[in-house]
Length: 214
Image (cartoon, rainbow, N blue to C red):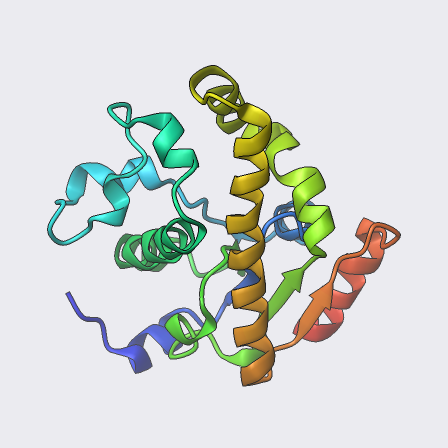
């Protein structure tokens, strides 16, 4: 199904997009917008969409699944894993946009989802998008040890032959994913903000609000 981008731009003019890689503060900022400014948000629930997909049309959305060789999955080549990360988000967008259109338009919506900017620029303009990123070291320090990633870490510890090396390998994929989004946003001229350890949540929130003129 193809939806006219001009129609999407009009219908989604109350949507603001937090782009970027992991561990850069997107989820924290979303919570601030919801709690302090009354925004709505929409989570990226892959499992919600999977039953409506096929391996032919949506191959990335079929993974991961319980039948995998988990050791092989977590240790696949970095380029291959990173390609899957981008592809699954692109496939999910077919469903995600429909869910966005179904949401009430009487309140603004904040979305935190890392995706290559050219995939959403046709209907989310630069002024309503901002890209967060953090250092490679911060991603490596935080990604697998976040509370919302506990299930991933538990799976690595239980089903891989060398969890410590698997985590190091997986971090390479997340770093590549983050840097590719950041570089693409920078090239296009989208506002980028680096989250450094000394930056407070309030300071980051202020920078985002200033960019969105809120």
